Image (cartoon, rainbow, N blue to C red; front, side, top):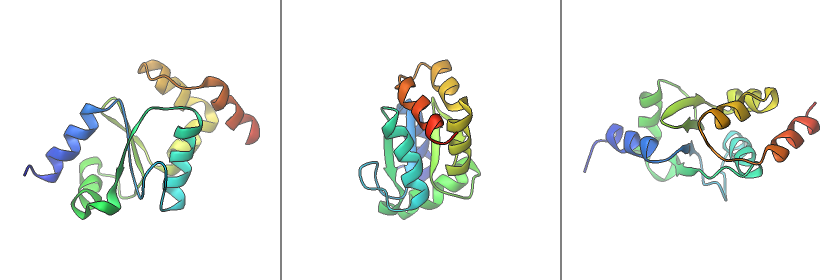
Length: 120
């Protein structure tokens, strides 16, 4: 068995978009994970979800991997983007759209605009 850092690194690099979260994208198990998964699901992002509650090594290891203390954690094209507050801010400012466009990640721009309209 490889060490947890290697497993996390392989997951991050093998998927264009990865969300390390509590629960799954279909069944988030905390409010912060639910908010980020809800945004990604609503705007049609194809992403891998990693349930940190199912693996204590990953739950602890992801915090060391990113040097970020909280979960959820979003990665795009191998790069750490942020947690719930950062993703929320980026969604509302349009920065998340730009990040996805710049990285060739398909998403529903109309849905992203609707989120901003509803929260404007």
